[in-house]
Image 1: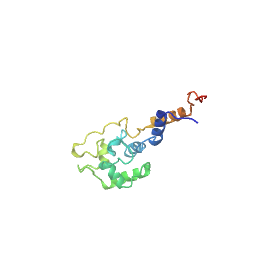
Image 2: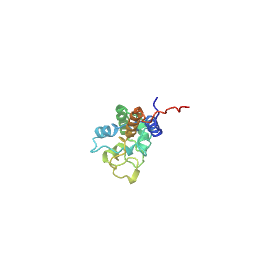
Image 3: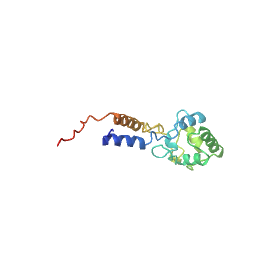
Image 4: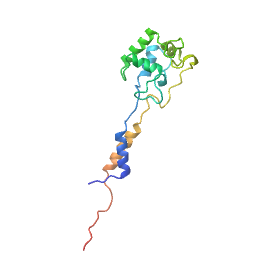
Amino acid sequence: MFKLHPVVSLALAAGLLLPLSANATPNFPAALQSELLLSQEPSCAVCHQGEPTSGTATTPLGSDLRAHGLMAYDEDSLLSAVQALRTEKTDGDGDGVSDVDELVAGTDPNLGAEASPLLPEPTYGCNASSEGLGLLALVGALLALVPSRRRARVPKQR
């Protein structure tokens, strides 16, 4: 029977318990760019607060999109919600310019009168993941299969 080293056991448990990825819907920025004919993909920060993961689409724009039927990983629901915001001329920040018009202009629809250009996509954004932990779990599992090189105990003779 193999005995696992405590460090290997901990690495294996961490890799199995932590998700392999914690992504927001990675195709949504490109879908918005295509639908609204934007010069670049909008930052995930227009919809997400903090690190973009599931459940963080809580900015005024993100909340409005969700209220209009946005579903994770469903590009059709995104496009339908954007069309509803466009038709209703939704202005989540109350600055007199619709959210869709602000996206097209390259400004943040969540900032109101002090709107600034959208920041470039952070490297830790929508496509960030903790896939390295999955690799760590795999290495731990492989190490667990390597037999220990301890000497077998020889019973004392009496």
